[in-house]
Image (cartoon, rainbow, N blue to C red; front, side, top):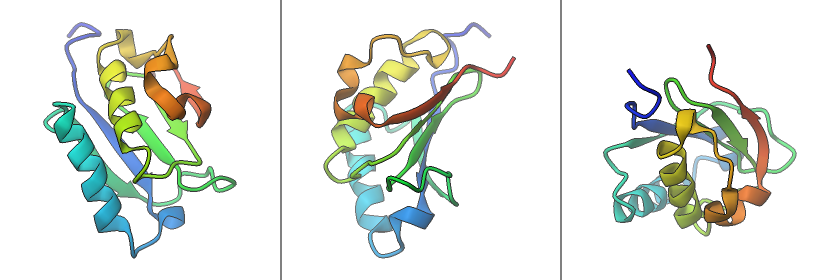
Length: 120
């Protein structure tokens, strides 16, 4: 498999800092943004336990097999949904998920906490 073949990813939303009450609304909003971007079949949205970036909730992770991993914090899932979708698009269309030019990511480029290269 080439580094461009696997065109799937998952977004992990920290359910610890995100809270129970708004999970459905925020998950639906993010899934709607992914649908509008044509990525609904490529990006899976999941809720996870603590992602460990508690200083600035809400935290999300972005991962894919054979791709770099990212953690963003200070995310507003309702306001940032389109920027998250744009980030997923560039992530899926770059070599091993390594985003070099993050301008298309909108506000998310300012929320990046860590980026880890693909595990070899």
